Length: 124
Image 1 (spheres, helix red, strand yellow):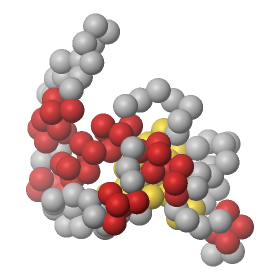
Image 2 (image 1 turned 180 degrees about the vertical axis):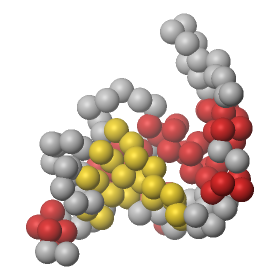
Image 3 (image 1 turned 45 degrees about the vertical axis):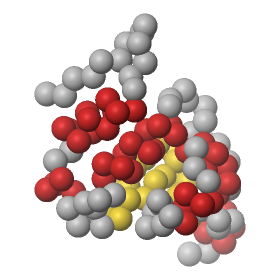
């Protein structure tokens, strides 16, 4: 069982998040696997930048690939820059730390690769 230390009066810290993830996700279960991390959009309150960094730091050394998808419900697809803003990453981060990751959106239809227009994604 994994326990955290956050609460109403105390926010959980990034090192605690990483420790919980490392304890809860054994490396042998993800070694060589492709992983899709599904996240909420900006209409939900969550420390997404911290979570994305922590998840990536824990998963990427073992996984073959770690991709990220924003679940949008009925909201419009996000542009790549909007996804980066939501996740607290820069283009430089994308080219270095996240170089083996794709950033996608889904809005109740098909996944749309970041940087693609919704109309071009429908043709595929």
